[in-house]
Amino acid sequence: MPEVFGQRFLPPPFCCPSQEGYIELMQFLQNEIPEVNYSQARVAILPVPFEKTTSFGKGAAHGPQAVLEVSPFLETYDEELEVEPFNAGITTLPTLNFSGFIEADFQIITNQVNQLLDDEKFVIAIGGEHSISFPLYRAYHAKFKNLSVIQFDAHADLRDQYQGTPFSHACVMRRIFSLNQRIVQLGIRALSKEEAKFIKSSSIKTWFAHQLYKGWSEKILHSLTENVYLTFDVDFFDPAVLPATGTPEPGGFFWPETLKFLKKLFETKNVIGVDVVELSPQPGSRHSEFTVAKLIYKLIGYKFFLNR
Image (cartoon, rainbow, N blue to C red):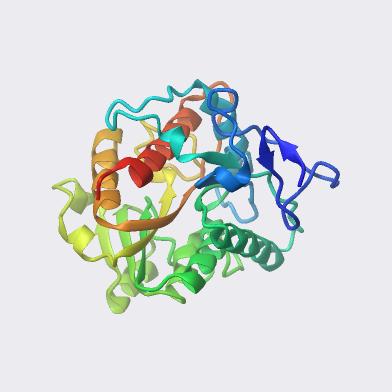
């Protein structure tokens, strides 16, 4: 295999430099951490610049590159954990060539994660629109038992169809629900009447934003199984923290309480995979992508350097 920044390109469906349409992305923390080849890395950063169904603000396809570009400006020492989380070994994969057909592209994403899981990588996918969580999750669903999904999000994303497609970003949790009904939603503050009815009729464990304002209940953790897939839509944050997202909603959450809960989640559960989606970079501002990069780095620290 060829080496790029000391890391291995994977065979198709991963791109390689000779393929038409290949987009060369930076590495996460490029030039700031020791080069690690693919076989040595425990963490795989997976850029997924897929955008097909965004319905308000556009630009999610540029999210992965924006995060990677700012990541070298992170401090590599985590003062909370008193470690440098990059010592877990981080590799950044090249991006994919997408076909333009949603179901075919979703299969490419699933196949990619299947290979990474076979290679025992902890995958953090950077979106891209939220619809990618469904093909990402399918790979975990096939490999893990006793699995639940926790969703940080302003929106329920439980529509059966939206704007003529069942694969819209607004339908992603409904598609996941079709595979696994053990879904826990946090921070929801925008949904349709039909979604509200579906939550009640399906007994989905949803903590609306107005409920979390009163405190983050321990019941949230108790409602999760041992193995947990984490999908984090960045519009969970208040727009004051992270404005660069396609569908910002007021009344969101801030860094301290979010990190406090995430730390508990990683302490008490086996988080087996993560996606961070819906960053839409804004011209003239970099703080949203920096926040996402730092969130990803914190999650690496929580995964590998907390004593469970």
